Image (cartoon, rainbow, N blue to C red; front, side, top):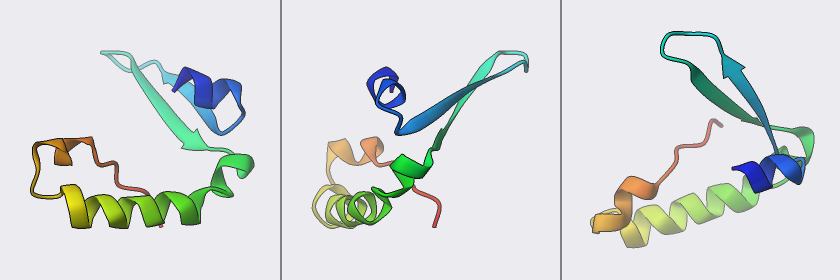
Length: 62
């Protein structure tokens, strides 16, 4: 995530909750990747959903 932040793809926001939480969101630059990320998500759902790696899937807001 740090590399994505450094590249300007995501914003990192530390929330002062207890326990402290960190929230990430796509920047305008990152939003340009939305179609590619959604295509990758569809591929992962098809090919990894029933595998041990399925817990790596991240749901993207539409």
